Amino acid sequence: MIVAVAGDSISAGSPLWDPDPAVRTTIPNPDERSQWQWWAAHRDPRLEFRTRAVYGKRTDEIAAFLDDVVDGAEVLVVQGGINDVAQQRSVDGAALNLTHIVERGHSLGLPVVLADVLPWPDGDERAARDIVRLNELVHGIGGVTSLPFHDTLARLEGWSDDGDHPSVDGHRLLGETAARVLSDL
Image (cartoon, rainbow, N blue to C red; front, side, top):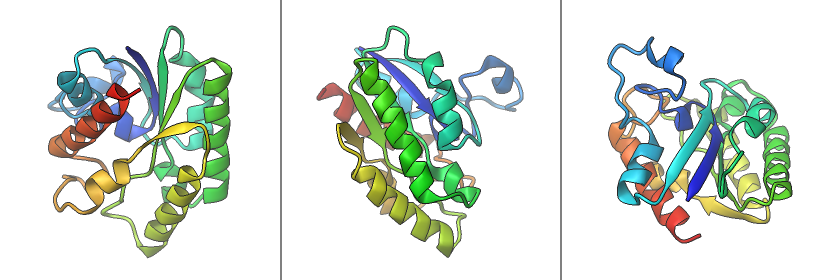
C-alpha cells in the first residue's frame, strides 16, 4: 500500500532524519530509524511511504505542499499542529486547516488517516492546554481514521531526547501504532 505522508518535523524524522537529502547532510549522525514510517514499514512490509514533511511547518504550510506527495498514493496520512501551538497560532485555525487538508484528500479519492498532536515535553502550560484543545478538535473531524500519536507517548517517560521530538524509541512506538492503524484499512 502506497502511503502519502504530509506533516512537520515529527513525520520528517527529527532530530536524526529528514526526507530531504540536502537537509539530511546537515545532521551529524543521521539515523533512518528516527522516523515512525521506517518502523511502520519494518512492522508491515506492505507499507510503502512517500513523505513530504518539513521542520517547523504549520498546518497552513502543510496544506500548501500536500499535492507534492499524493500522486499514486492509496492512503493519505496527515500529521501536524504542534508548530501552530508553538507559534501561538489559533488552535481553531489549525483545526480548520486540517479539515481542509482532509477534504482535499477526500476530493482526490483517498482515505485519510489523521494523527493527533503529540505531547510537548519542553512546552509550557499554555502549550499543554492548546494541545488538549487542538486534539479535541482533531478528534471531531469527520471522515478520517484516527492515528493516536498523543496517547501512544503521553503516559511514557523519556520518549524524547531533545524535549521536542521523539527519540528513536519514541519513533518506534509511533511506527508500531501507525502500522496497526494502516494495516486495518
